[in-house]
Image 1 (cartoon, rainbow, N blue to C red):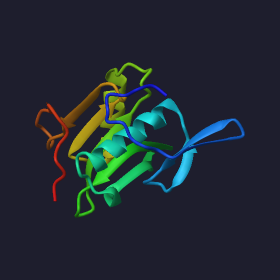
Image 2: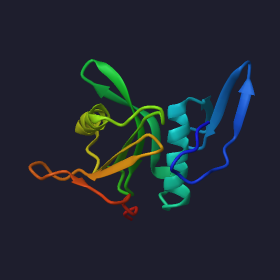
Image 3: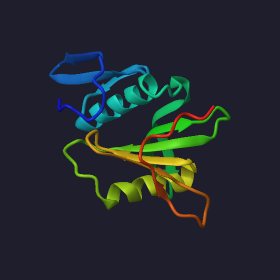
Image 4: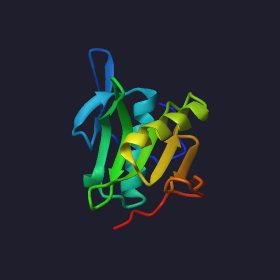
Length: 148
């Protein structure tokens, strides 16, 4: 897989029947190793092992009902009160981040209500403070420290 702009990590990877899988420590199971999954696993690893985000507060690929469809948020982190706090949309490193990715995470956040939004393709990362209604979105220079 491609080298990302995130710290390297040791992952459990297996190949069976011509299919490659990676172990997801949040979901506690092997999942197909796609380019997007490679980014997701690296980003989760970075947040937990380098920024100290609590593993127990992560949800990966969680279901979001949206109109008459079921969508999935890539990474959702809750605060210690159980409220959505940090929502991330992961893209393949082969996909250039565009307005569509920002629109997607913003639309998901209409249901979720997270304080922070992030879009990453593993090479480029954007993190925003999503303020209360009527205030401007703020591009952050770095990822927020986890709030206890």
